[in-house]
Image 1 (cartoon, rainbow, N blue to C red):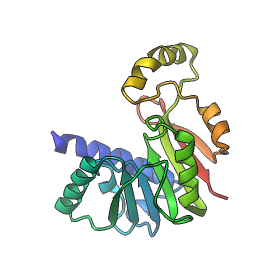
Image 2: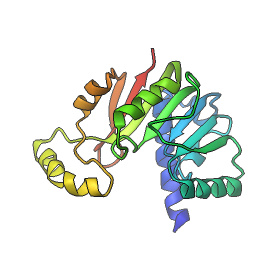
Image 3: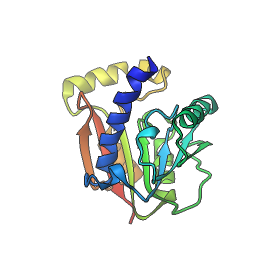
Length: 195
């Protein structure tokens, strides 16, 4: 079963990776950048990153990181460093990464504002801070459903009704772009540049 899921995840992340690199396509095959991948998990998506890209992956779960280390060893991946770390309190130096990428993280952490502030802290000036997340729908019917299931989703560790405009205002973010991605188009890829 693992092989079945591995390919779609790698392909999906490769498409997201192109979006991170302005869609130029160069970074898909060659990327001399330092990337922080929040929520490295078991490493399934991280294997899609270019081999000449320096990736630091963090996750709160030590067992997930062990799975990632085993996966990287099997695949001969040597360009990824993994650390057990809280996304809201990164033990990383300021201005370190060209790209800080947090897929599916913002709605599952206790303090998403603190996480975004940490992402900006460790990003180099001129670098990109990118998060991919589900936010409450603009469609009034879907938004009502998301609000209705929010108490149940919260017990699962997921905020189903996180409001993107309110979140951007609270975090004092001015995105360069917000793009609906994935199928169905209920996920937002938000890209900011650190000034």
